[in-house]
Length: 306
Image (cartoon, rainbow, N blue to C red; front, side):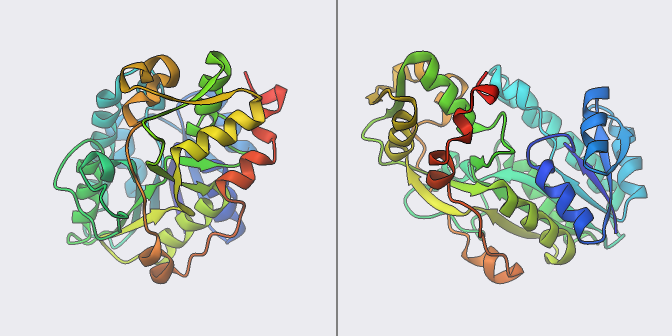
């Protein structure tokens, strides 16, 4: 299968592209810069220049592919506090590519996040793949994708855990938490730290995207989760132990100071089940969990800490 991958120079793609190529697929990676093109070529994929703002280019690229995996998101906007701009760009790009695939039967795999379940009020029990909030940031793009399953597209949405981790991760939530703790001298959590965040190893996620591309039923929702919920206090204490600093509870009003752009998500309780995903696709996370991976020390390598 000839597969278009957006966000092809990013963290998740660094596992997805080798997984696709290693299983006989061809990959065309969307590159918005020369540096991105070099990274994509280094993975062994073909380069196609473009970005999320070029909706006509996205439609054409999707129409020419045998399948699409949409990973791109304007993470820089999220980090600078303009989350809604990133959400709007993602929705427009998803709609552009999806419209080009209606009636083709091709697979279209898009990306959301499990934290969106907590933001939608699903926090009194583990979130499941059957939970379908009606609307909201990133939820609208996910619901559009699911709806394509009724329009001749083998569409699926992967909700990723907030902490997708491994030595391939250079800009994710785990590295951000470590960076904020290093800067402030405190590994912070809000309240009593009992609220939980799920996590997943990048290499397990690479396999999940391939399986979704190859066999996810039309209109399905999948959970990219290995650890189903780690207490935020445990997360902070693990980081603190590696940095040799204090782990401490802070008030919600202090969260922006100690947690930067992650303050919005700091207090969310997001336990998340992966039972249906594992059963549906035969996917089993086998790589190191979050605590083991962080304890291994690569996140604290001086060469990668800046």
